[in-house]
Amino acid sequence: MNNSLLDLLSKKNGRRCFVIAEGCDNHLGNMDVAKEMCLRAKLAGADAIKFQHHLPDEEMLPDVSMSDNFEEPLYEFLKKYALKLDDHAELMRYCEELGIKYMCTPFSYKAAEEMVSIGLDMIKIGSGEMTDIPSLVKMATVLRKPMIVSTGMCTFEEIDRTYAALIETGIPLALTHCVSEYPPVYEDINVGLIPVLRKRYPKALIGHSDHTPDLYTCFAAVTLGAKIVEKHVILDKRQPGPDQSVSIDFQDLKQLVDGIRKIESSSGTEKKIHVREKQIREWAFRSIVSTRRITAGEVIDGEMIWSKRPGTGIPSRFRDEVIGKTAIVDIEENTLLKWEDLN
Image 1 (cartoon, rainbow, N blue to C red):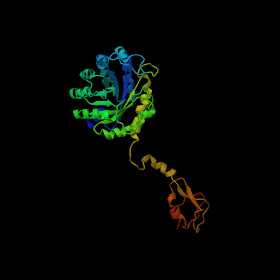
Image 2: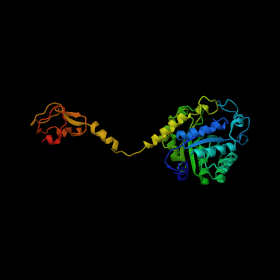
Image 3: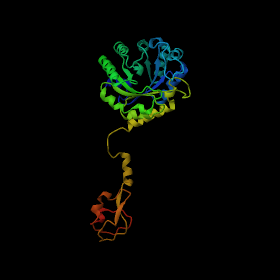
Image 4: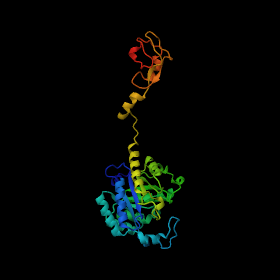
């Protein structure tokens, strides 16, 4: 396990799942909206808020054809709405005041270099850049920052190559399971891959980057060992945009964080009688009781006794041992039997 990345992700407890609120470009270039998203993420209990740094001419050609969830060419969308470097610096300072980690996905080496120059201490790589090994290795070797890489749209062979190349650089590495559909078909999620990834890539921390419009697959991922959960967030789910269909609002984010923390608290493997169970045991377990009046001197048979609550008398598992004994006192009907009343 990559302890240095664990420590960086969560200084309080490296075993906690690290929850990232992915703000993507849902701010639509409005800094007031971006700051409100930072604040809401903090109030919801997320560990980090993440935005994206786009330098459109560094990452794509202007005429790249887009998938159906884009109402306008991505190049034009980013030219209008992408945050500038000064915006990121301002948001980073604001998040420091709030006490929430500021993260960013740069979509080119130059974008990563710019973000590191203003203090970014961890680089998140989207699935589209996962196979761009030259850029990733340059980021790793030159910028020397921990890296979280999403694995959507990729084969095991492609992940193997990227994993091997980045592990060779010695940087702390995490991989997040991801399905790059907007939104995905649930049958395509395959959240059961989380333990497979943990075994296949033992030197990386494994997480889950989720594009469903609800919370269920995130909860499943945590139960299967995901130590990072990344979820798209938006202030108003009615707002149009390329990430609208895969984003949850901040009330949902609060429920997500709350659910993850409860899953973590309940995921122990110790089987014992807990303190709060002991008082329940006393009334909920069964004891042996008389089904009719038993007079002193009678030999007890199976028709005279059965089990009822509470569990403060002779435990019902001793029924066969009670049968054949002799009552030495009168025992009224519907009464707990006691060993001292039997010969």
